[in-house]
Image (cartoon, rainbow, N blue to C red):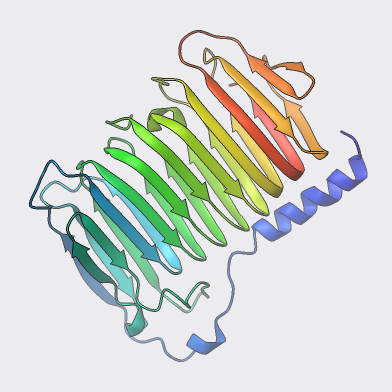
Length: 286
């Protein structure tokens, strides 16, 4: 720890900014009405062998994703109390988009507005893209067939988990977030080759529990943040850190040599390259 006082101040800033989730929307006050519930039912493509490009465009509110769609590509509901938020479903060839109305300018939410999607996804091989603003996200993606996963979000509070293994090899997992709180759990089950995580000001937990089936590379670039990396025992790991104002704490059997931290084990290896503007980095080895 190079400067305890400065890092203490940084920690306070991170906590206060990451918790600033609710933002008022004056232009939408007085426009709320009765809550409407729309059913969402997106049928399978004509060619079952083709990989689906599924894009979810969500402005603000609450977005819940889980496996479980059997008779359709996507099933679920959308609840909202502003008529302009009615979701739109479009499809062309292998591309399917589910988009919230007014999503381009509706990026923050207050407590008077209701906007909630609860969607189940099928096990069809797909490239899943999620673009969202200020929202709360709960994503259980275990047991799906994700070829690529891209998440881009603004101020948010998100939990993403792979409780069960991804059933195909994932080429890339790309996650970009803003002033937010993000918890990504059981990431070894994602079965990715390359993972990129980019964050601004926030609190981020990346937990690599699960079965690692092949070598993986993780690139992390965050600003003023509190970052927790958890790697379970037995997974060989090399982790390199860049960040002059980064306070690094380790728990477990991490071995340090300069800016490199190593865990021994057998089987596939994870290699981390981490760049931090400033903040706290916790390396855990549960």
